[in-house]
Length: 120
Length: 120
DNA sequence: CCGTATGTACGTCTATATTCGTATCAATGA
DNA sequence: TCATTGATACGAATATAGACGTACATACGG
Image 1 (cartoon, each protein chain N blue to C red):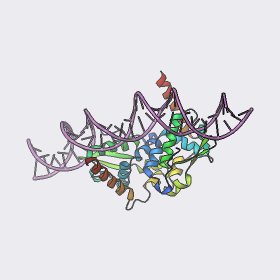
Image 2: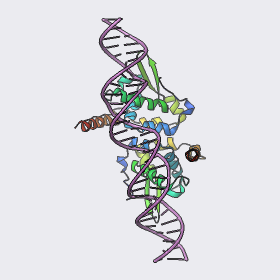
Image 3: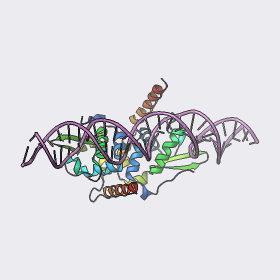
Image 4: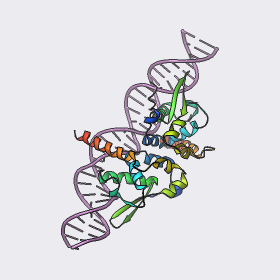
């Protein structure tokens, strides 16, 4: 079972903010925001697949991304029109300067450090 | 001990989104956004004080509100300039139409319902 | 048809969040 | 000075989130 994508009018602001309030999901969304559809594996390849599956569900269920099954991929796409319609300006302020995004790099670096600490 | 208010430059986007991603805190912030300082007791009087204390801490620590001790009150104020400076447009998109805010009413109604369910 | 690639499903462990009763503290005012 | 008011501190219970190993499903390419 692939998901419950909420209808546009059922997207809740607090759910969207909760979904984006996680550094991994925020980094993922910032990556997805560039271009059209992305296969899961292209987004944050460092993070274990089952961990990302968990985060994709959170993003789907809150209405932040579409996920559709094509071939053997589950492609992700930001629901930009729906979010802009429901909460004008929100995505723009969150995605902000996407070029050479420092948060994504920082998130990945922090993840790597925490993994090292966990193994030590 | 009253709080660790982060400096403007230390406010993190994911922390702000997490703080605002809770319906009670979002309703509280929307109330605080109107006017200047507010005593805690004026904001969501239905919610138990110790519960609100917990949420005030979350909002303080993430940098969403200032809280200062005056007389016997701990007054709350939205850190609008700091947030606008760090994340332009974010607050505007979240506070949106503040007049006759449906989310606040909805949050309170939902809270009351859940309390009834808990007692049943 | 069998191996490989892409992801999800499931289960588990741990950590963090949420709620709130009770105790306490500090400032005020009678 | 002593009760009242506004709010935090503490502690405990419960719930939710996060991370991820393993197993499984599905689609493709030979």
